[in-house]
Length: 243
Figure 1 (cartoon, rainbow, N blue to C red):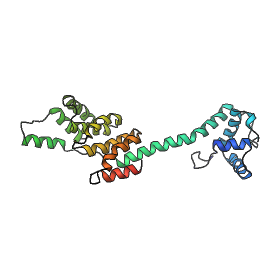
Figure 2: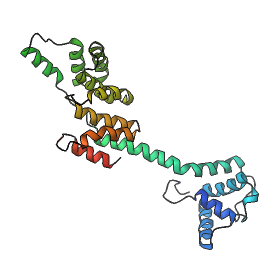
Figure 3: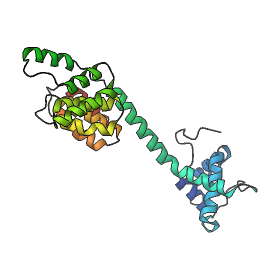
Figure 4: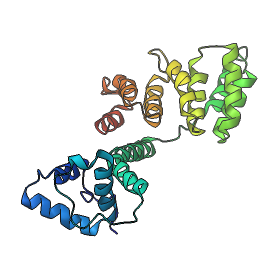
């Protein structure tokens, strides 16, 4: 049997209905009947359609397809399958497309935050280093994103709204594939005055893509598209063109 997902293979519901109602022209009828010889799924669907909608709708009895002993449930199931194929194909394609876009554009964000913190503490000893922030930064840098999350959350518990730790918390969530949880901290880091605003907008858009929210992804990309001199302008243009 031919592959059911091959382009233009199986009959559509409209083609089956017109064939049974006798409203197809000779060429279309010939094509349908040739197809039925070669496609058990569509043959079952024609029988199921007749059974499901009643004999009164059938003006033209399908040639030699009404065979005894066939399960009515199987015939009706064939109708349902044919009706669902376009929708399922769209959903599968959409899911694959989102996955491909994310894999194409996502790059892990490398950090030297712990070194910068130590350098800052050396230059300004009175400022000190917050142990939770340092622990989160070190865990992030060695790729232990799961361990960095509670450390950043602890720091944010003491300093809510901090843009730096919010950004790295959002990135750790992305690395752990916890996309919905990445949204809020990345939104915090995407404010206009944040030093991580561009990065946050970019990764926020990617998080929305994984969450199948194309509209929100485009909104997140808009500030990057309005800054041609920005670091993410070209990437934002390329990604937007594919949404």
